[in-house]
Each structure stands twice: as structure tokens, then as C-alpha cells.
Length: 234
Image (cartoon, rainbow, N blue to C red; front, top):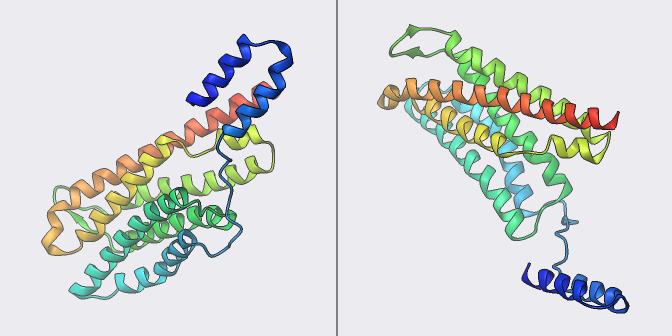
């Protein structure tokens, strides 16, 4: 930014004959824009494919009725959550982002989260405070999965329209907080199936409701952004 600001100041103080020369000199000092890798199977994409492949394994271990099944299920989900952050970090730092990876990453996230929510709904847990309450996990699960289906459709529609609509539904900080609370809540809920961590169940359910609230809130924010763009186009 220092070089760009200096070039701009020189341009404003010089005569008109030097304008084009200074613009060319300034553009040559700017770093090249980050480009998507032409490779399909980059390291981040391989990690993302690993998350997709882990979904059926997660389902299988969930129904293994012994201590190692519960431990394996929780460990698989934690590993998936870590690689969700890791593949994005590697793609940015090593410039290994690809169009295929950008498409596959949110798909892998939604598959893992939706599968885990459905699994938890099939085996309702007894809350320590409220006792048997099958709806405790079902209600926020419907809200979260419904939001993800809606946003997938909205983003696909926005991508077919124009750039401003795509910008209106770009991932924001609210969506990142939603994802973080989801991952923490589901990790706690999976771990609390083990009697050693059963006392964590209320906090996991509470975080799941926070995540559901953030999901609905972010959906409303995205819809408002879209509505503003549509109004400006009229």
C-alpha cells in the first residue's frame, strides 16, 4: 500500500504528460491477483474429499454399540472439523485454491453436519435437567438443515444472475460464527453419548440452539442484502 500511495501522490503532483507513465509504473509494483490452481486434486481438495469419504464411516461407527464406537464417531467429527479449517488455510497460504475445491468444500461441510444432526435425532438423548425430550435436538436440526438447503438454492440462483447478487450472498463473519458454534455443539453432543461426558449434554444442546439462531439470523441478513441489490436494479 505504501508504494501505491506514493505513486498516487506523484501522479497528482506531476503534469499530464507523466500520467500514463506513472500509472504503468504503479501497476507494475502491485502484486499479481491470486489465481485459482488449474489442478483438480490439490492438497486442500484431497482433505475435502477425505471429509466426504468420512461421512459413511461416521454413520457406521455411530451405530456401533460399544465404547470405541462412540469414541470413533466423535474423533471422526473432530478430525473433519479440523480439516475444514486446515484446507482453507492451506489453499490461501500456498495458493492452491481451485474451482473444484471451492465447489466441494461447502458440500462436504453440509454433508457432515446434516448427517450428524440426523444421526443425533435418531437416538434422542435424555437431558439432565429436562429429562426425556426428543424434540430438543430435532427442532434446531430442522432449522439448520432447512437454512442450508435454502442458502444453497439462493446462492445457485444468485450465481446465475450477476456479480452484485453473488457478492450479496458471499460468506460473512456471521456465517463463520454459525459454523464454529455448529462444530463445537455437535462435538459436545457426540461426546456426551459417552457416560463420562454426559454432564456436557446441556451445554451442547444450548450451543446447538445458538447455532440455529445464528443460522436463521444469517439467512435473514443474506435475504436483506439480496433485496437491496434487487431494489437498486429497478
